[in-house]
Length: 331
Image (cartoon, rainbow, N blue to C red):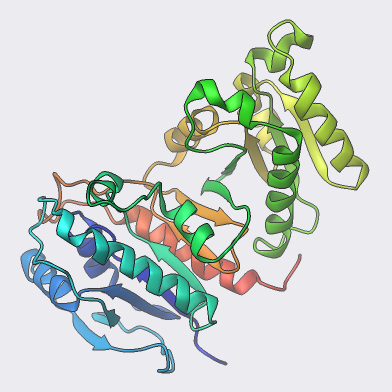
């Protein structure tokens, strides 16, 4: 059986990403863990942490092989300027983007089964003159994917978002019937194809308090959400809602659900992060490849100290590995 390759981008070089990669290299894997990063940066961080790693330089054309403890396959991408832990430098913004571009190209060309991303610093990338709103949008654009959906997951809960990084006052206008239908279809299909759930059960939140209170607290539920859900239910999709968000996240509902569809970022994610922070993973649905990510930032204050928790990265790697095995299989 051919060994799977999972690509890992180390993220912002001044952040905790490189040392999380070094920690991940201490564990043997059933797949090839292949990092796209500056090899000397990884060796430097390993030395800081007092950890031993053996870097095996590889390329897209090399056959992947299962990772041994203490070993790390690496596609070398050189820094533009030496990086100091905890100190951002705009000179390395292009380096970060290059690692993401390489990962996208390799996955698109079937040289890898999945991409796992370490944390990046959006502000420094934009300060360097590169328009960058996040990994999700970057991979969608580079893979020429018309629409992607952000979903976070932790043990016991999956939350997808109908809208993502928008000011709250813009959410209602962005939440059109066409947009909601497209998001719902992607979520449902990906739960089937990547999570191997034959008939997913999805809880859909309303936008307004009490799901609009029959129109007294807003009409988005009546005019936008319910018509879409009715249409999709007629086509066999198991969608329940719109439900009040303040009661949706309770055992009564969640124990029979495979996922929740929240209408905006801070409606669903605070609940998930409270439940599973450190054990949560960000998954981009709709891409032509599997992509997962840590659920935290660059933690510049911890960079180089050895105190960064690698739990979220381990969950992201494990989730990516599980998803690669689900492709083409429906329970």
